[in-house]
Image 1 (cartoon, rainbow, N blue to C red):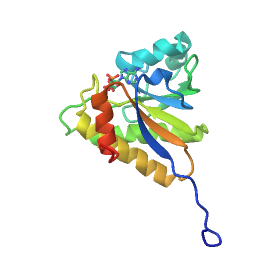
Image 2: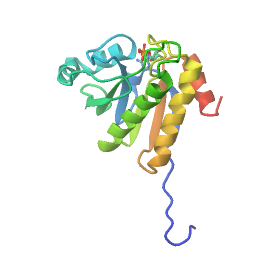
Image 3: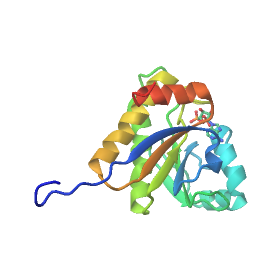
Image 4: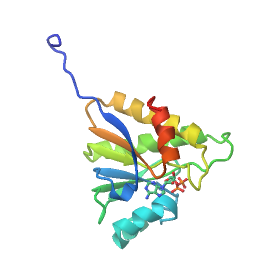
Length: 180
Ligand code: ADP
């Protein structure tokens, strides 16, 4: 029973899940890409395998992406309608702007998702694999970036999920969310 003129918008649910992001039902999934956008190992390779060769063909036309920015493609054979490709920072010890670049990856993906009308978005743990960003430092940065974006865009998303490939990673995101 708010006062006249007040409106309540449902909060965005921020959740963690354990599993393979290529099978996760969301309007858009993020890809921890590299700056070439031409595929790689880890989650990037898994997304390209699951989406099919059409994804690489579309990515070739994007001419790469800067670290911390994002570009969108269709999802092809994935359950997701879109893929948000974002090159995370390579960890060099923390003195090369890695924290800010990592936060920027999450923001850039959510900007694109918003522009394309996505209500649900799934993220892998960007940069904490081959790029060696320390997990316990990355998770709070990711959570804070997502929370801040959702707070600035109330009612824009139904759910944002951190889809973690192993329990250690999920525990770190749960702790960052205050649910550890
Ligand atoms: P980066 O180069 O950004 O570090 P990686 O793909 O090497 O990217 O690792 C990022 C995270 O994605 C790691 O936690 C890794 O375990 C995880 N990962 C790998 N494959 C999948 C997948 N199919 N679904 C979700 N997460 C995945």
